[in-house]
Image (cartoon, rainbow, N blue to C red; front, top):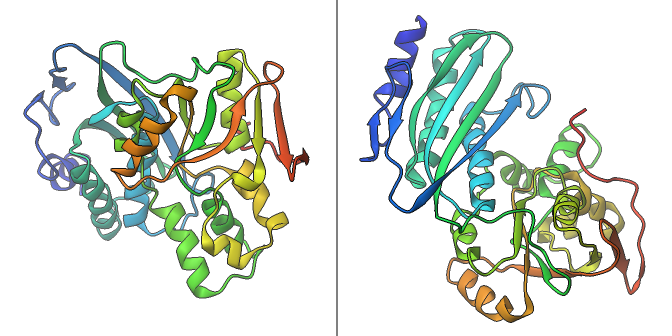
Length: 319
């Protein structure tokens, strides 16, 4: 199978078709129509075998994950996903692998009404780069800047499962088959908080998705907003599986610093707290308040039982 047969079989003739795509796969570039009174939001993520996922990861799960992590970035901007471009580097054109990978990607794309409009295919070490595009009403995009003293800090769901899944597969933790399957699912099939991100528009003062760890990603908000934060680590939500499998001292570093969670971290002014919590519940999101914006600019103070809590891990570092 050559490159163009691969594109035709797995991408051009598969997936949803949006009315705002004027020209999709098959030309030198795609042409889309952005809705009136909206801005375009663009994000790109690259996943490399052996760095961001295990080489033997289920291809269907990998297809889902590759798109989900990009949609999570759009969610953090309050954007509605619309189109993606995929650059896929493969060591070989394995038909079965491609069938499963594209099935996983098309499934989540269909769920969020996203069309694959182009990309590139090359031969080399397995690498997946996705460029996702979405739209947001003019001036309504959520940003990392905007947090103010007195704002409350929330996360959209439990943290730490993905990190435990990775380390358990490396042999660090002895989980039961049921526990391992539960945390692996959180890593392999993350659920981007797209609806929640749109609810946050006009209510949250800042937002980011948690990819590099709570501490590292909160630091981005603090640096761009010129504020500090206090976090009660005992309020940071973790799954029942983590509480069952590990002690608090064991799971807190994962919840605070490991990353790969793809939940939303956001700040909310006091006046908007009630409305935000009510609106999020309508989409099944039980956001948890874990702290407040206060203190010295750029500094994160961690508290446990009202006393300072120290942690060596600070989040994922790419270099």
